[in-house]
Image (cartoon, rainbow, N blue to C red; front, side, top):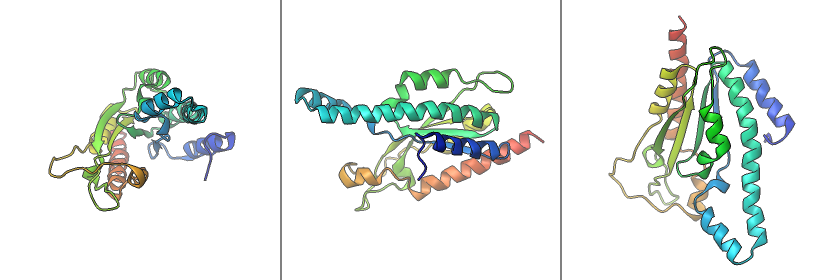
Length: 212
């Protein structure tokens, strides 16, 4: 596997972007979200209460990894925008990374590299149960994801985001997502992946139509 924290890993990603055709690139960003999980607040309180220095160091390491990766993500997003790519960020909806000052500042200051106009990210909440996310025993998992789509063409970015939006229809009960099922939920279900591919295909076609 490539390591995005290394210069070699970053350069490989840059080369892929630079060699891609204009408007035919999807940059999907899903940095490991362990440090930003809301449950980590309780873990941190326990670590402090019990003077668990190893636990505190482990959690701090997750945040340190996030900051290294996010700094590289900023570089890749800027390059991908110049290539007319659709850029998508996915984390769980309650992940604290969404409210990290560096993330908020960067997304709020995005500009079209050609015109200098403001690029507005499009954000939706989608539920894994509507993509058939399930426990090993076959019970639906809600798994709320927050998806932010970024594109130079506003209508296409919005269309991509809305194409990924699925909210629970309330026709089933959700299983608790913990233990091994929590680990399983790190993988996208096939229905989710199919939706991503369809939205990307629609983006490429839509961009071609606009450029006719």
